[in-house]
Amino acid sequence: MEFQQEIRGFLMSRRARITPEQAGLPYVGGNRRVKGLRREEVAMLAGLSVEYYTRMERGQLGGASESVLDAIARALKLDDDERAHLYDLARNVAPGARRKRPQRTSPITASVQQVLESMSVPAVVQNGRLDLLAANDLGRALYADLFTMAQQPPNIARYVFLDPRAEAYYTDHDEAKDQVVAILRATAGRDPLDKQLTGLVGELSTRSTDFSTRWAKHNVRRHSRGRKAVHHPAVGTMTLVYDDFALPGDPHVSITTYTADPGTPSADALTLLAAWAETQKQPQTANDEVRRTHPRHP
Image (cartoon, rainbow, N blue to C red; front, side, top):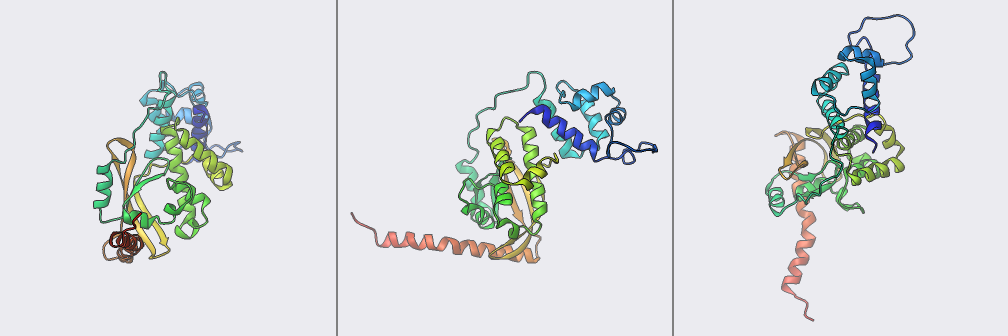
């Protein structure tokens, strides 16, 4: 992924969405060639020269100070996730920036799996590419479709864009698509040397014009907390609150838990989900019992 093209696309898309009126600039009559802000208007709002801002928008963010980046963020009205993305992009083109991605060991240790199993709510471990690396029984039940996908580990982005079951699973499939793309875009800015991410984006862009259209918008979002509504084929519709807890070994891998407001139909559905998850284990348990009581002899 070309850092400079990423910077250019991000900054241009952010200024294109802001009108002069929204930026607090005085109205000037006549036709404008652009719907959003011009480069010179962003430069003025940020207190920079037009030449300097133009170089930055062409990808030359390396060496920009925090005060300059903050000024651009204010001028473009970036939210917290977008501001963090701008800093990520600047860090990756800074002089002496790390060009070799360090080798990472698997964050799924026996203790992490133990923590997952001890939870009484659905829980999964996922990375910035939206791979599901581990889950407890309730987490596997919640994402039952994904754990039956041919390509493993399960990947939420592939499911959302390439699996027809996702349209019925997400009550707002369009919002789910936007969220997935925005999370992947933020991950790309933070870790542009991730070859697996580059391959995933390439695969989705090739197989889904819907994905490539949304990818070109340069929207970013960090997966941290929020609400999502899903329609589980076994227990019906649930509105769940999700929270991310970063793992100490890798801040970009997190345990995500799903809960429901007490006393709601969604809480009842989670109870049903737990019962359904138990039924999914019974065939295997029965087979284990048969093997124990009637061992096969050579």
